[in-house]
Structures are given as C-alpha cells and as structure tokens.
Image (cartoon, rainbow, N blue to C red; front, side):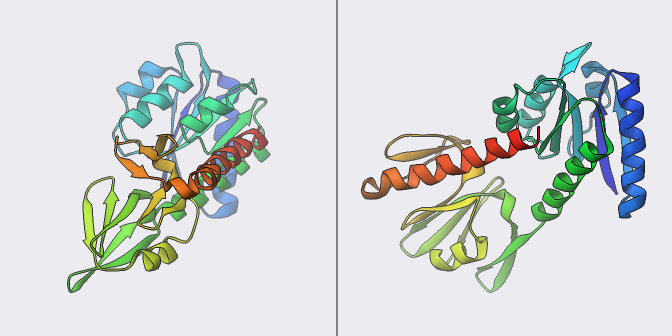
Length: 243
C-alpha cells in the first residue's frame, strides 16, 4: 500500500487528481490510500509522522502555502516524496531545496499525474535498497539513503548515517563500489559524501546538513566542487524539465 496526501483547495483539481490516481493504480496494479486536504491547517491536524509516502502540494492554497508545508515536513525529518502543483514555473530553486520529485503545471492531466507517480514510485523502491556491511562477525544492512558520509581512521571505515555511526574494516574502495556512484561522491582518498546531505561548501570542506565537515583535498578542490555543482545543476534541470 502506498499512502498519499493531496493538499489542493480547488474542487475541480481534486476531482481530476482522484480520477487519475485511481486510473493509474488500476492500470499499474498499485494500491493507493489517498487523503485529500484543502488547507494547511487541515493537513497538520491529520498529520502522522512517517505515514505518507507521497505528498502532492499545491503551492498556492487559499489557506496556506505548499512550499511552507514542504519546508516543515523536511524540518521534521520526513522523507516522503513531494510533488508540487502550481500554475507558475518559478519555483525550481524552492523545489530543489525541498527535494521535490516532480512538478505538475495546471491544468491537471493524466500524463502529469502519471509522470509524477512514475518518479515517486521509482524513488520509493530505490530508497529501500541497501548495502551489506561486515561489522564484527555479522553483516549489517544499511539503506543507501540513510548514509550521509563515510570516512576512514586508522584503517577503520566509519559510516555516518542519519541515526548512528557504524564502524567496519571494509576498505573505502569496496564501500565506494557498493554505493555505486551518484549521489555518492569520493571527495577525498579518506572520505565519501552523499551529496543529498551537503548543505554548503568552502574551498576546503563540505558542510553537511548535520553540521559536520568533510575535508576536500586542496590539490583537487576545484574538480571535486565542480562535481557537486554538476549534481546540483542536474537536479535543478530535472526540476525544470518536469515543468
């Protein structure tokens, strides 16, 4: 079951979204449980942490703002897939900051809903993939999306996740191979970062969203930072293409 919230105050749009969601579910053998909300207050009154997998947010609500709802969701640590609904094409930057998966430009169409669901469902599936890391005599499964960065101290690889630090003797090169490229970036011979968790950077460090700093080698600083900027640009371009 996929749990979906739709924040939309226009009844005609709500009806179209409901129809297209139902048709998509039938055609693609997906079970959706959908809750509709017409205002931000109504959404928060019924909100349960970790419940919704996908949240459709109309940017312009009569009572509330979809961007603000999205910001609050992210500030509370919600990893749901966000789809922005708008009549404007001016929110690519805000959408990137919210890690919005798709934009739907009104009028609502079956194609727009279908593209959004395709992207969201693919990411939900990918988010559940993990890597097996040897820890002592055991193998620990870690979801890729939970890994913020990895660093090496005295031949011990320390995997920093959103919940804990995990220590393993697996070489960093093997961990890099398991992670499989973007959004993971080998930024130093002793570290790998998940670019989704980078908040800022300097000439010498990436600043992670939790405040930690991951060093960038001075000898390769320009090239490493360019790889991150390319990642950001591609995310923005993807958001723009979705419009």
